[in-house]
Image (cartoon, rainbow, N blue to C red; front, side):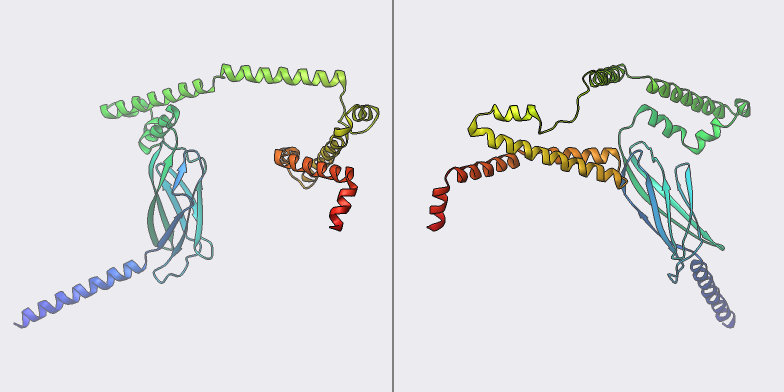
Amino acid sequence: MYKKIGFVGIFSFLIILSAVQTSEAELWELIIDLNLDKTVIVSGETLVVSGKVVDHSYKPIRGAEILVRTGSETTKAFTDPWGVFSAEFDNFERVPGTYTINVVGTWYGMTGLESTQVQVKGDASPILLLQQKLNTDEAIKYLSSNESDFVKDPIGQRLFKYYHNLLHELILENKEASKPNLEELFVQEQRIIANELKEQAIEEFKPGSGVYDGLKYQYYINSLKPEIKDIVSSQLNFTKNLFEEAQIVRDQIIADGGTHDEAHKAYLEMLSIPREKLEQFNDQKLQELDNTDNPVEDTKEMND
């Protein structure tokens, strides 16, 4: 009976000891909280993997080494004083599908492991499919070996030839893709010819900026019918003022460090006059002219 009690006691002690050791082992593991900037990306975009590393008391771990791996690609990062890290995969070009992201963190013998998934969308081109097949550990192994390494390994010989044939296909596909498109070349040539003709015309006629004064302007205004002369003149002055304001905005954007594209875009936006705005301007001018032509009626309305 005493032996039985002793055996039960020893067995219970071993169970308790085992539980304590397991608990202590778990306390030495890191906790990694992962976050993806996008769970769905388009093939070719940059994939950003960030997160936070803490211990079991939720104390941030500073200086932990973080290895982020997807497929055969691995990138490294370190946690900051708050346990935060961020790693990037530039040009994450993949065949459309779902991919697993594995993250391993280590710090003074402590280890943490976490994983997540990202979905890639896009078109699977022949080049992309070949790159995907060649971007594996097995493919890299056989592509970096010599055929003589597999003399006594028939399966290894077949895999060696298989991956080298894929590599040859990829080279041919890249050459084909790099050939110039005849239609695009034709369009480019036409643009060059058009620009050359424009430069020749500018050099020959030397046109200047449009102005709203001088003899030609006065001759044009005087040739108009009296009933529309004032409103046409007002429209021309309105356009002139708008043109000058657009030039000022364009020059200011460049002076502030903006690009020429940004300045040109703002310039064109200011010159784009909506039809409603022009009609409103015309109505206003017609109303002013009507009031000028009928001062007695206006005075009567004011007295009433």
